[in-house]
Length: 138
Image (cartoon, rainbow, N blue to C red; front, side):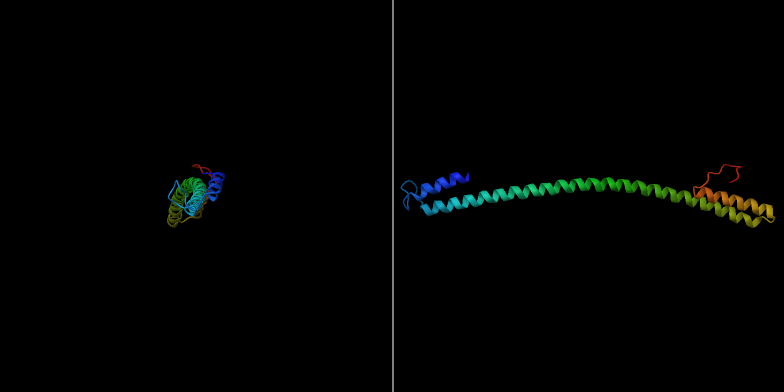
């Protein structure tokens, strides 16, 4: 019911006697009902506004959730890459360790130089500074 219609009904009621012949209620009762109606209409407006705000927050949270999920997938991919890099580096370190341990069995300066050169190549390759092919020198 529009505010204009409510006002129109109030004007009609103000012109009536305290008790209408058609209805067994008083003008005060009708005014009270109209006030209750206006209050209910305001509550409906307020609830609709609250609902609109809640849906706006919901939509924002859904968008954020989607962003966070995409970021999670990205981070998981980077984590997998890092774990693979660590595994490769570990294998390189094991190889370097084997080269260094083998140096204990060599006695000549030339043999030790060969071991140190191999260790140097292995370190460079492990650090990603040099791709060493069999038989190449740095």
